[in-house]
Image (cartoon, one colour):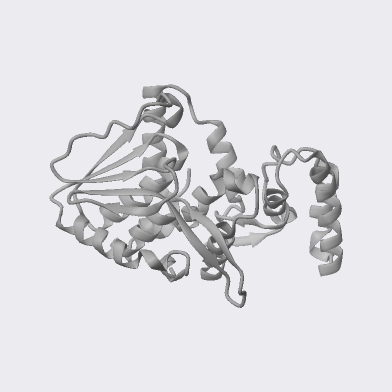
Length: 297
């Protein structure tokens, strides 16, 4: 795996990550805390996997899901006699990693994003899952569990609402990074096995089925034209943003050997997420166990 901190948008966190590692390795026990939402679980399993493979003592603490916490209340964090790592995916974007004497607070990271060969810079936000993945990789560079979860390190970025409003440069850089290192494969919609189409209102499913059959024999120009025709009715419906349509039709990220893509898997998992305090926590814990053990939902 290529170090996520090699990405310019994350490189400024280098020293903070080193300090996090020092705090974790010095702690007699780590309390790993996250909300019982999909976003919380995706970040938690990255760090928990590294703790397991490094044989560091820890406790998993799942908080109420965001929808179960009244708007004017804050998370009630557990008391601890060790190090508290609080993964806070719904916090306002800020420093990303805030360290105290016995605490690490992980929040979305507001940063400047630049692309190689371009003089234009972008304001962007990197989500908690990517930060947790970067920390986990540094904490245990040879962790097989962290390696299995690598394709999901961009999952939190996909779940952010920012892509529903505008182009997300952080998602583009993460996707490209994972594709170049071989953790995912970026393909067009006709190459995806059993894709979820529920977000693509107006898509011509019969046309897609015909396109899947003819895709191997088509050249680049034919494929480009066919995808544009496939996308046109979706864009006319205007139910989702153009950047998300582009990702769903032109740039699906294959994350599993069975050909399933990230967007389809996350949409299905989120649709099955239960509502209600204890039920949500139990489900979140079961999903965490499965991801840590197998790397898949």
